[in-house]
Image (tube, rainbow, N blue to C red; front, side):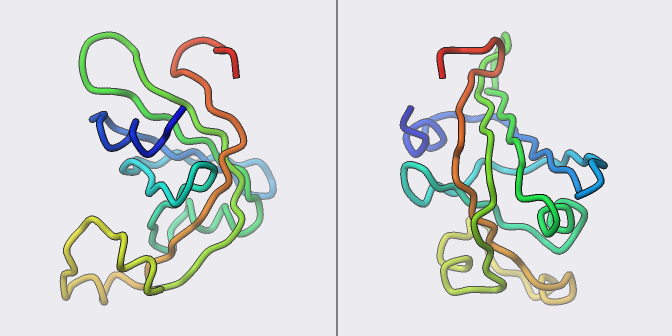
Length: 127
C-alpha cells in the first residue's frame, strides 16, 4: 500500500493508541501521519500523555477511519525510532500555521515511527 497516496487522497479521522511501560493505555485523536518515506511515518505532538508513553514503550497503533458510509480505513502498527524537538524538519512539514500562542503551550516533538504492519480497519487482511 502506498501510504503517501492513501493519506493524500483519503479524508477521515485517526486515533493514535499508546501504552506506558506498565501497560496503561491511552488513545488520542491525531491527524493523518506525515509520510517521510515508504516505511516511515511521523506525528507532531506536544509533551502530553501520548508522548510520555512513548518514552518508555516505543510501540503504538494508529487507526484511521475514512469519512463516508461503512467502516473503511487502515490500522498501522508502529515502532518509534526517533524524535526531534522543535526541529527544522518538524516546522517544514507542519500543516498548521504558526500561532504565537503555540509558544505558551510548550515544545513540539516530531516522533518518527517505522511501519511494522498495515491492516484494513475491519478484518485481518492479508498483511
